[in-house]
Image 1 (cartoon, rainbow, N blue to C red):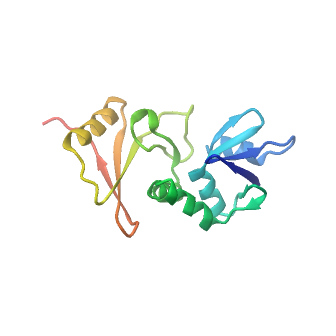
Image 2: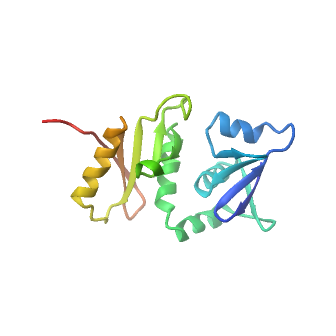
Length: 171
């Protein structure tokens, strides 16, 4: 498949009779369909490019995975990409968690938006980040308030990821 990179979004034209972009959205829950296009975030597109499922072009020049990763680093979302890739490789369906103040919502394999509720909100922080106790409490409170568990993804300087499952408990 061919995608066109413009302004941080990769668009795939849905040609008549072409089922691959539609299946990518409906089966694997990638992107958003608008009009005759499947629009992917740069993170989703980079993942698909790295897996050999998508060729991305910018100004008619094919983008390498290295170039896309450099763009993610420039946008300061490389750690977010690493967590996305790790969770996707573990079989989760991943959607944005923006409205919940987190990076992602996670659905179990075979589920997704419109098919049930997500089980987790994912918050990504750097190992060197000084987290404020009030901010941390608000992350937990929001996740609990929407009946989800909080998965805290800590990315260290070597880009290794450690996950912590944070749950609200009453003493």
